Amino acid sequence: MNSFASYPSLRGKTVFLTGGAGGIGAETVRAFAEQGAKVGFVDLNANAGAALLDEIGSDHAFETCDLRNIAALQAAFAALARKLGDADILVNNAAHDDRHDWRDVTPDYWDERMATNLRHMFFAIQAVAPAMIKAGRGSIINLGSNSWWEAGGGFPAYATAKSAVHGLTRSMARDLGHHRIRVNTIVPGWIMTERQKQLWVTPEALAKQVDRQCLPDPIDPVYVARMVLFLASDDAAMCTAQNFMVEAGSI
Image 1 (cartoon, rainbow, N blue to C red):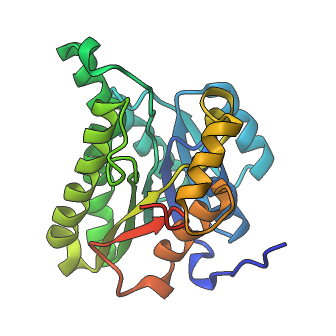
Image 2: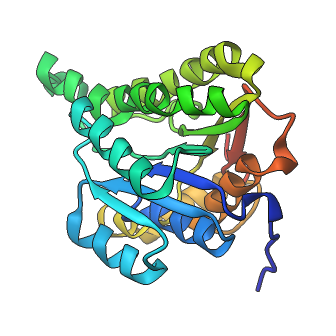
């Protein structure tokens, strides 16, 4: 069993996180709560979000929100700020890697995929950055994907959105860096969330994936959460505009 690090610099910090009710997001919410941070998270799944809030306790906060609706996102973040204070840390986690055939993609579907997987990240940054600027510090962590690095097929709109996350990270790192606000991308590989297991993980697919990795083990969501903690902490004070891979050497 692994013995993970504690980060004293995270104690008492306020974290806003999108897509926090399940998968990597829920694991990250738990990880921040264990570090003594105050966690505010949003998700479309009201039942799962409420259950996770019950688990971590009333010192934290949850808001139901469809991130495709930017006004709803802004309202949800304002509600979290009223409950917990302004965000010191933002984790742009929410995404949905639905499979689709390129021949079937319509303009409306393309726009919906961008709204689901990319657009909200910018507006979440826009919502929290003024308070971070006033504080003179902050950490913003965007979740990318190694799917496009690997030239993965079967979801061109998702891969396009995730590749754009890197441009957003590097541009905002430049715009916000002189305020000592750091912006980084975490690049997960194929992470064994419950959703992945239910929809796409078969013995054959998993064996093929592990064979591509340098490390021979499936990747648990906890390892993405631990990288998030590091980048949010003062230990990463000189890390910005970078990609941090959590993919077991599969690229």
